[in-house]
Image (cartoon, rainbow, N blue to C red; front, side, top):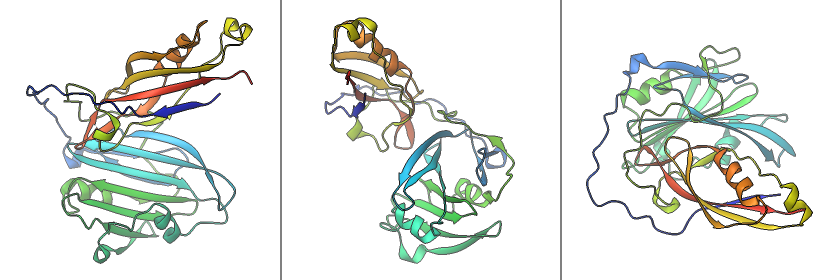
Length: 288
């Protein structure tokens, strides 16, 4: 049974009245904690516990899957991201990894800079569009490929400087161990209504998507088809406001709703903030 995820095309109208912003307290740079991940070869200082997604991605080059992780923190409009990828034999070069990550298009050629961190060679790039500043650093360790990204402010921002200067590489790193989940957002959702996919900067990213099971009655009756649900993937990491667009009998709709409530995800982002967004879920029930 396969689950298909599509974004709503309908428009959600925001309240026209002003929204009172919530107070945001960002830890001073010197108060940031150091974080790492079990079996990874990096540690870095961040203002709060990052959200993390771990997935297995098939790599054609080696004809097998590799573990890839994404860690994200939003701090007052600055987004810090870490992309960590296994580098199985035969090893992929850092240059090939940079091309794979589609880093060079949109970067200022003059910004390319060679780096060395903990004895490992790296590269740095900055965005050509200064109205949307992004700085990225790439590294290759013995068994990993890393991409560190800071977006939202220029490279000379104190937080960005702290982020990049705190990177250490190599085995047996020390720091708070991060596991998959939504992390601890510093920025609460200050928008009154959820958005649709086309209106956010970064769509919600699933970290865990359980499949619904068949009921015995539905099996006996040989019921097949699709349950379609509409739900809000909230800024707090919960699936809420679940609505039935199309259902199936004998408990299959209820099974789909149960599965939807168990979805884990990193919330959508707009203007550097976590926000809620509408999404559509399709659960296909097939007996064969």
